[in-house]
Image (cartoon, rainbow, N blue to C red; front, side, top):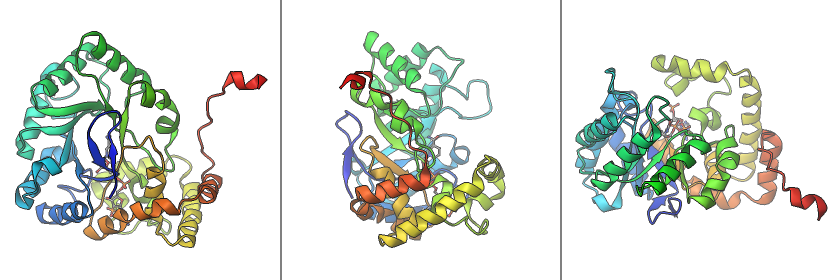
Length: 335
Ligand code: NDP
């Protein structure tokens, strides 16, 4: 495993990490989650991602049980939660001071921890003044309930505004963002956030690196029973992915990428994960798995990174045809 800095913070985070979305509490009980987390931990993963909303809180309870059973040293772990959707009551959602403080406390009780390392604002909240959210997150860190705070799926403009409020008010600024990033979803990480990496030292913990399994090749011949897109509760995800109008095109691209992966002696999931790891602005790639064998396969992506030569990367671009256009450097016009 390699360890990367989380942006400009002093924290070192495993380049591949492991998250609980969809799986914990839905596909995996405590014993099965334990097997997956153990496989990840033994491969060197130190970061385990969670959220108050995953399985209505059950994902945190399960992770807490696993942490108790496994008995790993707390300082060897980086644990996160994300706050936004905490329940049905009017004060159980969003990023008010009340929900942030109560939401983090409830997550800590479920995880049975004194603190989480990372806490994210799971989405932007257009109904709460940003200064209230920044003060509350800073307060949570000041109280030692979390060590670093950040955002998830915020625009560059929202992140910068939060950062500037924190600097102006002498509060603790956000240091990380959790965006989606994979071969099919690139714009934010590769273009929109570009200035934030240098200017505010933003780190990224990227999600759905396999596009919910599409980039494993498992959907090329239909939807296998037991796979994520076949789960009854997740029909909305299947409909969203298949209803985009480019599903068939993507399946065709997946087939080409699978051949390319075979050519360099890796599996398609390994190629897709290694491709994310090639981006130096990615601090960690959060993987997901419904069984330990997937974890074992995915962790080998670390060794696939060096196989992604310039030539292979160019051939991937030829298949994807979605490289974000770089901003024009107008001075270059007269060079
Ligand atoms: P992926 O896109 O990598 O999808 C993971 C799923 O793909 C697995 O659960 C499994 O599903 C399948 N899969 C994984 N590896 C293999 C393999 N080697 N062979 C075959 N199938 C495989 O990641 P996730 O979408 O799960 O996201 C990862 C994490 O990111 C989450 O757990 C969560 O922590 C975080 N996240 C954050 C979000 C945010 O808004 N901040 C949103 C979403 C995720 P199956 O076997 O069931 O088909």
